[in-house]
Image 1: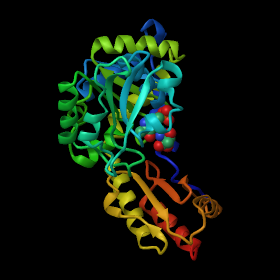
Image 2: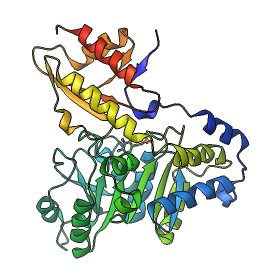
Image 3: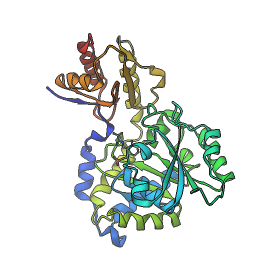
Image 4: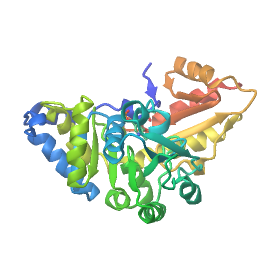
Length: 345
Ligand code: TLP
């Protein structure tokens, strides 16, 4: 029985073209700045995001942490959504490693932060308070149904930040999904960000790696933080080579994943006991709730797994399914058939 793995787009396997590029990559020691393939990837990333420079790092988590460390010092504070990956899934790295305090504002269901809420969260200059330095956004927003944040909202946050002397970091792990869903360029979405991170290892199907994109000075500082975090890799052009292929060949197919997610969402929403509004599914991430008296999400995950379908329990009654490269429309049909066989709850 072949498995249909919908747990995450991180499970994607590299394409044959990526494997060939990895085998043939020209390499050097990147800590000396001498890996030509990494340099090429960094130039490509800077170009695509419209930033001066970029830095290759091993993971999205490190990309975000390096950016927080570069923007903020000990005792500084950043404003972040309470559902943000940075806040929710990164071990509180900012505080753990950097002494940087997160100030949460509730995420609205579309992944945005209410602008008045952000304004209120900005600290006045007072000896009792940490200093607010940064606003962190996430695009697409993973835990808010993978919703893309549109350019006009990003601009409003940028205006608010500028008026208060704050900077903006965008966790753009899935920024290419956002661009595909909104029909705008990544450059446009990156415009409001002082720093932007994005991942090669999710929907773009490369095996490893993320990029930090910003101005030249910022990237120079970020390079120092990458080193102290243990992210200074040597002949890592073998990884960057796959990343270049990812950026050159995998961004234009993301709409396929979005159509498959929509197909899955519509099929699931027709099943009794599943709470899901397909209109909230804008990219490749599908969240749904199991209405009582359904068994727990963990129980349903096990039952589906016995039928060769892997999904993630993201709460006691909540399940996430993510479409990606390698998941065809037929696979979605099979997944839906397996869900139907799990009934009645
Ligand atoms: N997200 C993973 C899990 O950690 C939840 C997933 O399966 O979705 N930012 C965002 C928005 C992310 O979704 C992720 C990974 C990261 C950062 C971290 O990337 P990695 O896993 O490369 O450290």
